[in-house]
Length: 547
Ligand code: N01
Image (cartoon, protein in one colour):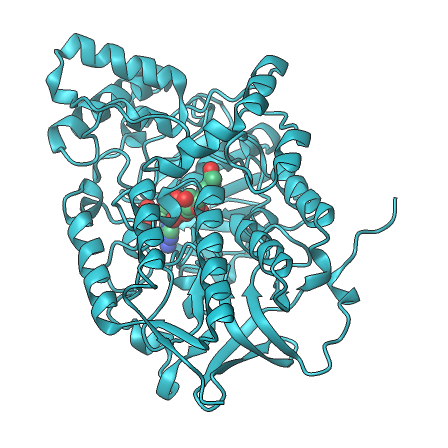
């Protein structure tokens, strides 16, 4: 088979001049390139990885898997694509998702528009020309009418300061930047720091391969089973015959998923019935556990009932009662830090080669050679895995030197927290669009659906501007202020604010505490975006260029 087309084959554009620059080529970037090029826009995407995939390119750690079911964690824009692609697992693992994205890039000939191994380092709006000057890591400067960030919400790796880390002489691997060739832990003593979604998925796989695994846990997390299994021909056939209804349901639902949330309060049923319902949803598995009742994220007592149920499950699975107690979270309501989904996590602590170290009780005090020392003792390790997360939501945008009107940087504009209108645009930064940006439903919606909705909205807007000869669009300060206040108000009714989570930026020292996700529900949000467009881009200022 011929080698797929690569970014290196991009025909040089004589003027380095584009209609749209797209940052990134994960789910969002690929669809943006597809959509904009099909509409006749001159597009270039810059991708810092060597290939497409975004988050699925970088997060190749053992066990990396999606927590949405395969049939709806996929694109809907092409019926041929959704009919021809077969998923092998109910919840896809990283290699299969990366193959899918590679297939999409090949099938729709997208690679020719993507320049790989090239990061966007800066973007400055030129008020004289009304265009953006975009600088890349290779020193190239191009200009464009629009800049569209498809940099994602979880792509800026967090490398926390851990005492003595620089003195550790064994191998160090970040789950979020895993070597493409993989890592063989056979016969090694391995440590892992971090028990978020990445750590929880990696622990069972590494434990099966390594000689010993030491899990350094700072905060225990609530883990829900996934019950992953091979897809069946019958289910596949059913899905493919019903894709239009499934996708429509996703587009209208609060989480962009094809199932309903219960309308019943957890407190409206007697104790034994409540436990039966939790049991039923536990057996369904995944994030659907949280749709068992309507008020798990808004009512402390309802949430506590769910926590109580899961506590019992943990105690039933983990054989050592002391280890079980240390694995039970005590500092946040269930689900308010993103709950990891995995089948083997708790049972892995029954293995003889796995040790849990509680960093709350015994913090790491230093490292040296191949030893990690805590207040309670020394651990000899050949390799250390850091599953320590991301500077989420705003991090990928703030990592780029973005300058809007009057040379104001995005960092300055957001020094007290992200300010956007609909998570799509930023006042003072004309013609900059952010796909699944801060204060949109983003990470609390099924991503491919959220991505398609944003890209379609942006494409419609660009088309409208082209046909009406409007050169500039940016949110008004008033509309942006109202949106920021509205997102904060909606979040204030939820229990999410009770956890120190990356949703709130709490994992990054000095980051303003702000709930970065719109909690009003994806379906309602999407309707609002459509209404804004239909009312002539209400809340945006539209401008005609002087020349
Ligand atoms: O990162 P995290 P993640 N010393 O920030 C600990 C998505 N995702 O990569 O809680 C010791 O959640 C930190 O401890 P604490 C998903 O949305 C999706 O796991 O801050 N420990 C925590 O335990 C997810 O939520 C999938 O006390 C330190 C961990 O590191 C998001 O990505 C799979 C530390 C970080 O957890 C991020 O998940 C994987 C320190 N200095 C990820 N610093 C899917 O299934 C941090 N920690 C699709």
